[in-house]
Image (spheres, rainbow, N blue to C red):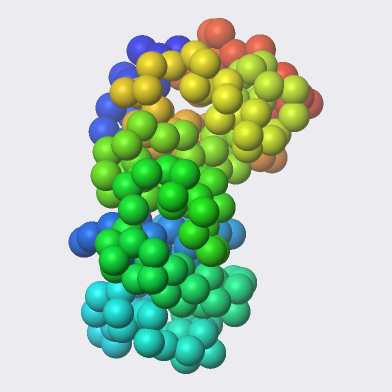
Length: 204
Ligand code: SF4
């Protein structure tokens, strides 16, 4: 399976555009329930108004909400970003922490978002178990339910830490290209030979 993923998606990587760890933190918070393409468009708009974490910390959430209003959950995301900026300035001297536990403790960052930042901004081994990853791990038969903590544990147990970050990007590509929620494309999937297709009732 490892070889199939590496062969089909050798360069799978984070598709959120960001120039520094804070920008990636913002983008990762914005990415919930939307596409990376939409987030990248909004990040370009934000870049015209806000530069650096201090600018975000000075904002009121309502003002940020207006700038990101085309995204789902914009109110919740705006509050999370402003609170995270203020917490990083207050507790981490204005620098995004590299450590997964410190990142996950920031307001507005769940464990998955923290893993995205740790892995992609700092190269820290981390498993970002998003919906695509959870679905693939369940269908591969490694967990019983689509549950992020269980998926994370399954991948941590099966793969070396050095593989975790790219592995998640490869599973995201698998989910987008083949292992869709509705009627997955098992007939063309590079993992078809070994995948038990757990829970799949209707495939193409
Ligand atoms: S064979 Fe089907 S269920 Fe298994 S990973 Fe591929 S698309 Fe998903």
